[in-house]
Image 1: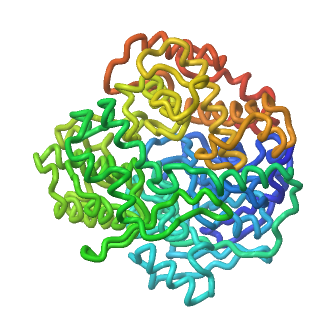
Image 2: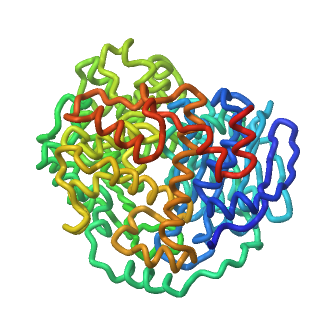
Length: 565
């Protein structure tokens, strides 16, 4: 099986010390990316670690496909205990940093400890430099990237950094890369902020040699020549379909369609797109560089989730207003979905839907924890009672745009996902709209037959995150291509995804997260039976816990030791 290469680099920012460790056994078992990050976190982070304390660790990992020239491979992974969900969480970012990370020659980089001073950590194939950066206190993401370029000659493609939101430990702060790409969901930016790490840079000339099958050329060529709506409209292309199905969350989830959708849909975004945008080595080019000269705003996006959170869910029907919110979040380093939904919760509490000036003011206050922003920076799960609104979260994470009240399998996916109410954990919505062929599609309503299919989808998406391969490659990848690219039987590859999901769940079980957390704020017919069936398919206990023997059997000695700590 083809996998990432290189040692683990441990960076202790408190002691200002580094060392490397051999992790060949982990790489061989988990391929790379999310699987490697999950395995390392499961074995090296205490089960009771405070997400914002020194015992938490943040792992940067990439996969074997980042040494290829194939489209859909400009991504990488970050893993740690989430300040938003209190569980183990991986976040995936696109852009251009993954190949610079690979150039360092490390299989994984662990950020440990807690610094007393604000730091930039510069990782190269020759070692690590710790730079105190007091002048970057409170700096925005663009300001931080500008400083790194001026002081070290490294552009934003080499930089993972936080903005004011991360420094102020906003629970949905992002780690930003290439300025506008985000390790977004779950608040890993706050983890770096708690460690007082403003930026981590990656540079080197030691990219490992990994033999990737020539079929990568076929995938790349097809990505370049495909006529696909996402190339013009990105993910927001699905908004009209969702709205027509009565499946577009609106007015803080109180409604399921939006009369102003035409002003924020794919066509509206396409009108503001001024050039092609892409990730490293990707010919699919589905990103959305947009600008409006009259408003003086230029950003990347918004994607569908952002257009929902700052658009329909906030009562906003002008794409330029959504662009402004998107740009503000990127500048401050905040997840656009959680920031938008949290703002929508406040708008609901104040009967202030559609107030764009208030929205931008709230984003300023959240990022700096000023006034009511200090409350909202905690996220919906922690503040809904005080706001007097419903708690639209699962495991502390607020909902994405794909409506589980219409797409019932997606609803089940939200409930069981280890990350919380996240649409990318299984991308089950693609089966139910559907965005796949008829032979793969399922009726949106009902849960019959869906638990087993959900397990398959979760395992496949976890495999993509180990690879690392973009989930929008679904029209271009097949079991045969996975087998060729990673040199293994497809069922063995899916087992890598299964082990990754299982380790996440086991870690979270040890933190008290079980069936009681696999809940939705709405009813789905047959939900409890489907939940039990899901656990049974996975071989878990009916209380949503993973038997210890499953974790200690087949994951290596470290997993067994960790289970007994």
